[in-house]
Length: 231
Image 1 (cartoon, rainbow, N blue to C red):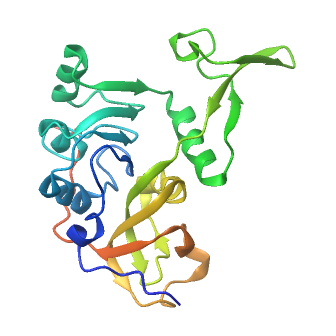
Image 2: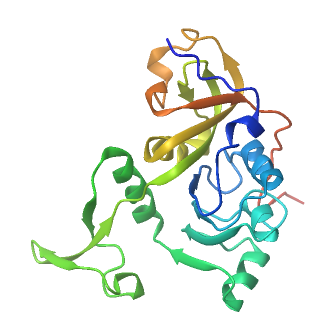
């Protein structure tokens, strides 16, 4: 069985170059590839197109790469927690595709499944539909959406093995597994790295065939976007 372990995030991302398209997993601030993002900051690559459910916050996640002007385009669903993102969008510094969340998820899943297009009712009759084909099925209008794929997918799992098999926890399962399948090269960082064969096959969410590099991450933060407490 192929051992896909690399030493750290810096080694894992070293061949990511300017103008690459990246998928970055996670939902809100849960399950985001923190170590890989930190390594990209050090690497200094620019002109990136980033596909992610959200753009992080100003001082965490993709928000850190927005501050350093490494991102030229965001393809996202929700971006409401990032003031720098808003500033760059309104000033025209950043290109943005805002996509309904279900359509974003399905476009990524389609990319991993090798399905170049599909019809969905989401966005019909809105700005989302501009320039896209619509078609009627059973008396209802649907919009043609295309797959999304990336040069590199950066995902974060709770646990993985040396062969690249991954287990995600909680909301980290929302986008990470489908992104792992939709990248030409998938880089996985994990909280716990175990030997091949140590994971129960029934609990694996992403088979190692989708993963090219894996490493054990360090110093993970458990951030909460909006903290609500009782009085």
